[in-house]
Length: 315
Image 1 (tube, rainbow, N blue to C red):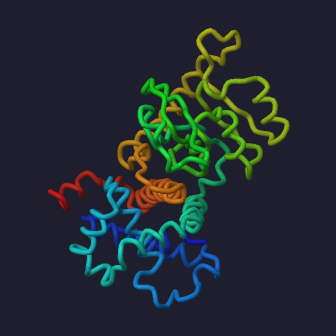
Image 2 (image 1 turned 180 degrees about the vertical axis):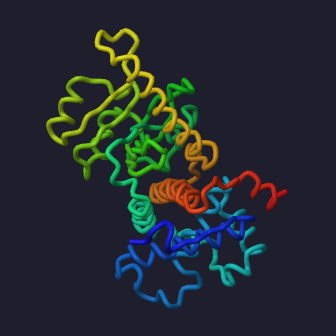
Image 3 (image 1 turned 45 degrees about the vertical axis):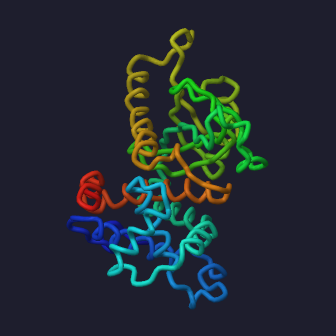
């Protein structure tokens, strides 16, 4: 296993190309480790214009710069990053290869969790956010995701109904996202928890009011030995002591910050995809991009100012 302080030494990231170089080295190292032979050595791979690691890296950086248009981002890379990527395949092949690598992208994300040690922490924060694929007004005419589980759901924060999915997340107390699951938008938050905790036992979950339920808590305890501490409603007869309530509210802010970063920095509520597999790949890429930044922040000991990088690159 790679160690944070031994394999990578990063003093400073000054511009976009520095970040692309660092991201590529980390992604390629993990790719070589986790990719199954039947993918890494697939037919005609030696004739490929771009490597899988290059494609994944370019996609990650594009997501971090909040660029939703693949055409615009690849056009920029071809003009300005020839020194980093001498050859570019055409956009159709690029997108096709990226979609086919969705499982590899997920394995890289999981390995990052192992490298940081967060996958073994006993306390997690659980939450969910909506991922619309279409506004309510156009949902009747929307055909792209028919037959792929997209349903109507409610977004309480925006007080609106949307067509799409729901992203369920498990995060550490520091905000690192260790696990996620995508369900139809009308699935209850408590039902989504079971997909998140499939590989866990004896951990403690901290959730909001959507995870309240005596029967739900008992099932978690009996089947997985998992405790859940949800935020109680104000009219609940059984309340946690004040100190515990304040601690839960404080810890909950971290997952809310993570959700805000995914929404505003990575546009996870604006996934422009023309197929379900394209949608799934974009979501996985955004989550990997978020965790990669978290990992690099630990390596350099301070936050990366992507807003400043965007100003330097795009003016």
